[in-house]
Image 1 (cartoon, helix red, strand yellow):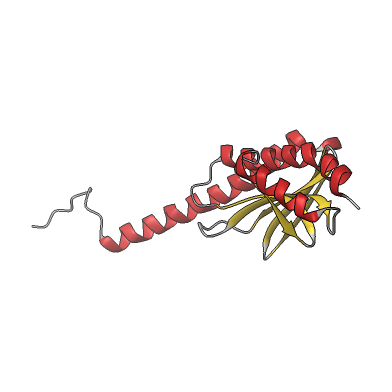
Image 2: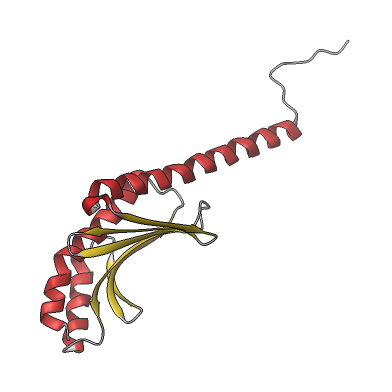
Length: 164
């Protein structure tokens, strides 16, 4: 006589169930990244004007915060995908570029937290980027807030002192 133990699960079924759970978790996680980004933007965007784009490269948002435009790109939902937040603060070429670069490097040392100044498209930006592996809602909010605040706090000063 054979008995079936209800707590015994075949290896094939366990693998399938685990894959289904992982797939659902990944979908929920991706959805929550998008929802969290949109929640943070809604709390910061002036006049609630937000540009949103989506294609095979991911999601892109743009909104105005103070005197700057803030961009957010989420490339996807896997651990290797990235969240990048940036804002342009000064067009190059600039006056006294050696002093500008020195100042930006000094600011990168202790003033920019998880973000940093960089050069993109011949412009100075403040940027924060990381993979989405184990990304929490607090980290999403912090990255967006830091970049937006530092860009808004520094763009006018940098343009006044180094702009052409």
